[in-house]
Length: 71
Image 1 (cartoon, rainbow, N blue to C red):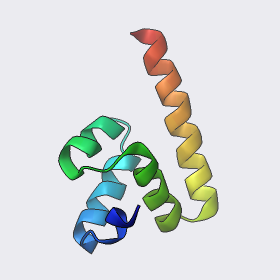
Image 2: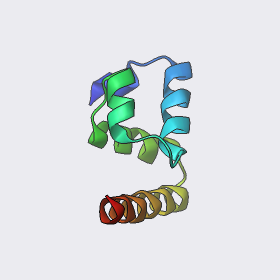
Image 3: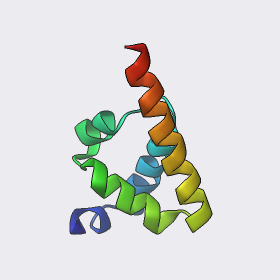
């Protein structure tokens, strides 16, 4: 997990922005930055306020469920 904290601030900000987007998957983040899904979640937990993190996680879960349904 320490890989997240070794990233420059600009990369951390870019990852947070990508994670907040509904159009970018965890796979895309892994391809660009080499971070696993749980590492992205840890970064988001450390970056966002607790209520914002919970809202983001709910949105990601719901969106992932809908996406799987429409495949």
